[in-house]
Image (tube, rainbow, N blue to C red):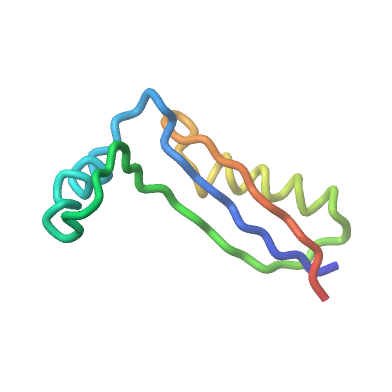
Length: 85
């Protein structure tokens, strides 16, 4: 079976987002007509892969997300998974 996954990785709320804060501090220089109250930069990973079934696909995505894609000390992750032809 062929699958497409989109993995969303976000800093935990308790973790300061230095990159997001730097971008937020400069938003009004480029877009002066908006007032940004919060800005955080996250990661999005898209992958297409084959697995024998959905259960295996989810198990493997859980492993990848925990051990490779995210720093689980400071980041949370979730994903959308769909079967594709």
